Image (cartoon, rainbow, N blue to C red; front, top):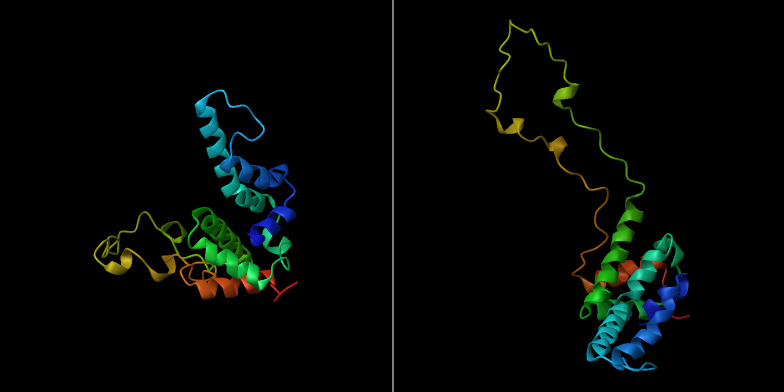
Length: 182
């Protein structure tokens, strides 16, 4: 969990300090309080569990330009551990996906959109054209439905296949400039 702890250290929000107390409260909800209703025990326990699981995601989201800000903060072993845990923990996997979404945004920043395709509003249409077949082959050809220039073009390729653990690790090491050990 060292990966997430470094995110918490970098974040400036007060909730970053809830990780340890929430860890205690999810195991022993009556720590430091007198429980007068049985339901309060479960509310405290479950709220603490949710807080414990998602505080790293909240802290990551609070960091301005997290990819740039966290550059150089992680070791290779911390990244390997994080990726391994993301296979079994849904909240860790969600954090991984948010990080890769940000990596994609950073890599797509320099993208220039392709030229716009010609649409009907761009054509020179003469409403009174009588000497030509103005209806032509309207609706009879497949090429009238979709043109290659109308196809969706992604700004850049996705960073990696999120099902390939080795590729994920390599991309995170590259993105964050991870070192062997600090």
